[in-house]
Every structure is written in C-alpha cells, then in structure tokens.
Length: 162
Image (tube, rainbow, N blue to C red):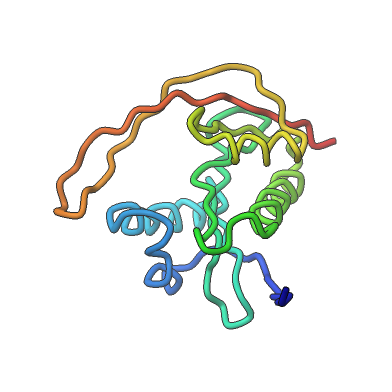
C-alpha cells in the first residue's frame, strides 16, 4: 500500500475559495456561503476551511455563536467525499472546538442526521454525547435548479470543552 501524507492547514473560508467548493453542496448552498462569510466578518460565526498546501479547501464547516448562549454550534460540516475517513473531519471538528474555546465558551453543540451513523460515530469518538432530538429542514436545489424542502430528524449532541 502506498502512503501519501498531506500537510493541511485550517483557516477562515474566503470568497476566493467558493469556486473550489462545489463538492460541498448544491450551487445554491455554495452561493449561500457568501452570506456565511459576511456573518464571519461580523463576528457572528466562524466558517472554517481545511486546505491543501496549494490552498484548496477539502473540508468546510461553521460555528454559529448566536444559537445557544455559552456554546458554539457546529453546522454544515463536510469533507470532500474522496477524502472521507482520512482524519480530516477530526481536524475540522478539533479546530472548531479550539475556536469556541478561544472565545471563552465552554461547550460545543451540533445536530447530526439520524441517517448518518458514520458522522455520529465520529462525534461520539471525539467526546460528544446525545442530549435530544430535533426535526430540521432546509431547501435543497435539484440539478434543474428547482428547490424542494428536505426534512430530517437530527440527534442533538454536546461536548464540554473544559
């Protein structure tokens, strides 16, 4: 087996990254990332990019500081499909936790779709524990540009960072 090592860095997502983020979701989702970058500039969120040495994002995810008092809420976490199960998600989550701690907050929370046991296993391995369930929904864009409402049940998870 050949082993390839990549040196990855974590930084804020920028407008210049968006053309390279098509793997992260529909064109609508990527367009909406502009809004999240503006929210990051205002200090409401952090939106992170895990990047290769040439600066290409291979994982992205946000931390919203406006959802719960005293916590950072992780959301829209994603790793390029070709690079999943390589430790990049762990790097992304740990980097997000560091950002939360740097803001003086002691808790991270997230919701994971119940249809995604691999993601839940990752969060549990990183110390997150379930504390509830919640129905979530958002618009998704089909290839023809039409929108449909997607609904899913999520398990709510949290981790104390102290």
